[in-house]
Length: 114
Image (cartoon, rainbow, N blue to C red; front, side, top):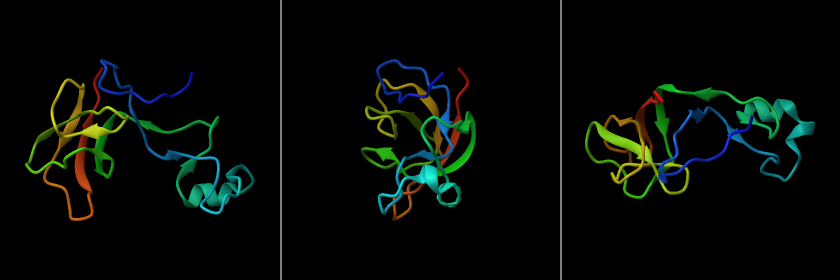
């Protein structure tokens, strides 16, 4: 099995990756040769097992489009694999618990039940 990005085209989300997936660090060095660096940066290497979450509370920074401004705004799958607060046809995967902070972080209550 493999993990792919979903969007608002009617895809059903299985879960959210707990860590980013990367091959190189910020200096272009291959992380496969530096597992301690990958662990410090909370990165999963391609081809390795990855942690997937279905429920939980997170500070989320990948909101597509306008940031949520109200409490209990539905969090839906966006066009580019992220989450959006702008409504639309995307599958709801949780709720944003309040407005975003000044640096774009928003409290997300993830609840993927499919």
